[in-house]
Image 1 (spheres, one colour):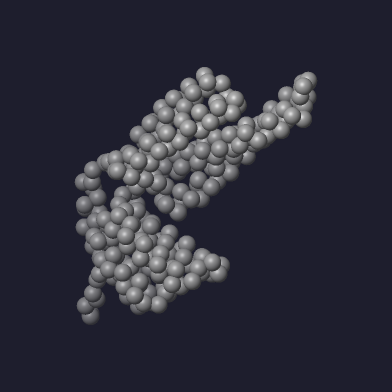
Image 2: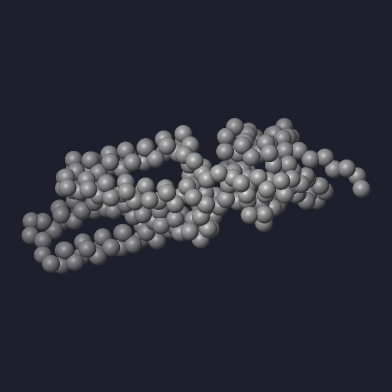
Length: 261
């Protein structure tokens, strides 16, 4: 049997950046890598992050090329940017890849990766994660202040920001644990549903409420209140459903890994 050379995942992608784009072949290899990591139970960790980022980059570029939104040069530039992504680099320099004819792809050092993962430490806060959390909370506070400044909410509504902060802390506690796939999926769906519901309700309060008041004032009757309440529930329900669907679809592409990882 002839000896088949292996190379790291990082080296393989680097080779792709100096040769013509072959989206179908790259997609097949990325899919096989993803399946190998998934079958070994290594998706909940840095190895899964690396192959997920690779697959997302290849699939997104391939779809954009098919739709005429990308050129092959732009697709290769996407691979070059991937090589600069710290989340990809960490494991891409460890995962060894063997690509044979057709092509068929396998990871020859999968057993060693599996042994290493069994003693891995829990996820830790990264600098990017801290920044993302602080910016999120400050942005939420700013939105509430703006709503109060527009006299759409009472100052007492700042209590809502404290509640959201507490809920965010609980959510992050679960994110930074090794959770079963169903729980991670539920977190993605519920989280996106809440974000879309908040955004939709804020837009409702800024645009629709003043419009309704200008139409029905100065003497709103019970029919106005019923109509406004019905519209509120429709807006809120639509945002929850849309947010949950988009969260599930996007989370599946990232294997339901947190954004900051």
